[in-house]
Length: 416
Image (cartoon, rainbow, N blue to C red; front, side):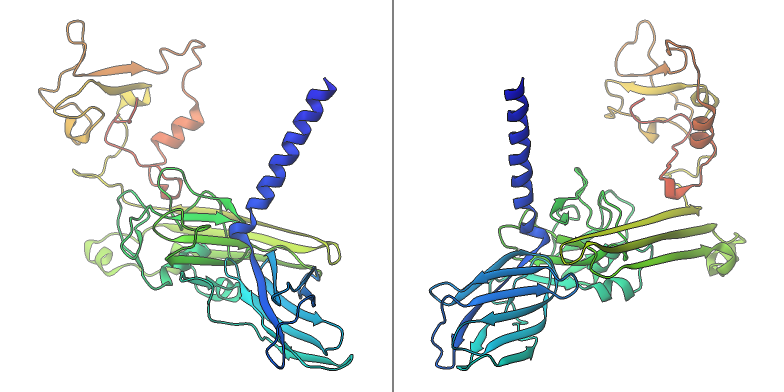
């Protein structure tokens, strides 16, 4: 038993290590460069130190025999690079910006001398020279200050060149990158897959992000490298805030209300009232150190309370309510195929939910290619009946668009 327990422990440990090794591919970046002297000769064995200016976390390495150095798996932020080697002046470069998914190159030229320190500001290369990928990063300031309807920072990716957003009610996100399909996207959050499995949507993935918990995100729109090229559309890498040595926090509340809005011209012309909209967004975020220069925490909370009227798409008008049969738990479904339809179709009923003349109903002699019924409550083995709260929610709260309730005429419920 002890052997099996130890085996499981080591297997879990190895899996954890492999997972941790995979994260830096898309949630971090690297610092690299070449160290030379005034004669352009490479300097091997030089000590290179990178310090995160907000957290104090330090990374140490040495230059290779060719004078190059690489510090991999580094979180985005501002970094101070220090190079020390005997016989040369100490070199320090501050405020080098490292962004997610793109390495920063800091090349160093050392002067012969003693212990004198040479300090410069931001000597990193701002032009990408390591690959041909077309990408852009939305910084912390841009995420926090650019206007957002709904406080979803990933809505900003529609500002990228080559990205178009079409207005549609069809399935999909409507976001196209250089002509790719609107579901050919890939989104990772801190290196973890965050895609909805059937229709990847760069704006509405499975995680809830807000401008307060996102540090920055990069969007690769063309020629992604191997670690990013999962799909042909937008490859979006999101980095969340990690906390720092100083305690910071915010409390926020945003409100929209029908009382603040003017009515639309077409509504006034048709004598229609203002659409109902009551939106309340509130929450907080806080971050700080657990152990200075080593361990940090960050957490955020946001709640969305949205009450909004919205039209229900219908080919023949807006349905008013489910039929009495549907409210009592009797649902219709198609057995086989009727007029080419193998599932429920609005073409089989009128505007009141009644079956059109000629649509066959399953009976003793007709068992296929017909419409059958199933009594959910009647077949309940415990005979509990319908839940009052659920019945109210599904059958009466017809205009709560933010809950994504789309009622079909009468008792048309797909798959029932």
